[in-house]
Length: 145
Image (cartoon, rainbow, N blue to C red; front, side, top):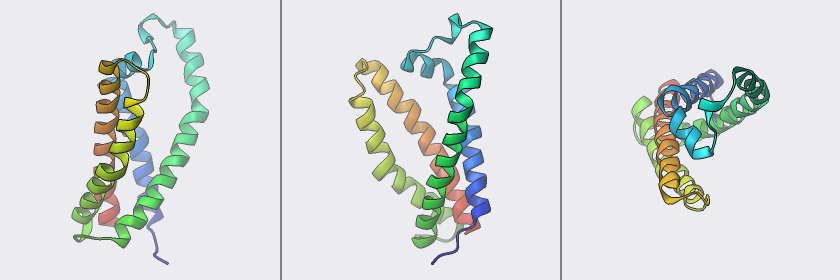
């Protein structure tokens, strides 16, 4: 059984939450809101507070799922090192993203029922986030394994 550096997994899970809040906030929040049909421009401050309170359990669940994802990803990084250290983690991350994450998200966008332009925007915002996140995760996990 391979020993996994659980601190590295936790760090990557925290980074995923931080990156997600930046990615789907200041960077692409307006675009993402339009894609999912949420108009934050016409939302009152009271409604925003109520929404923030209602999503806290979702943030917690998302964090738990991130820990699970990166714990399993750490096994792949540790088990298949095409190069030593962070470089090997980057290579693993890219191939996992390309072979698994990107195709599934493409299918989700294609079959979302959204107009073609919104579906492509959904795909690009999601996939660019996932690529950046997995490259960061791969580098950290590869370096700490």
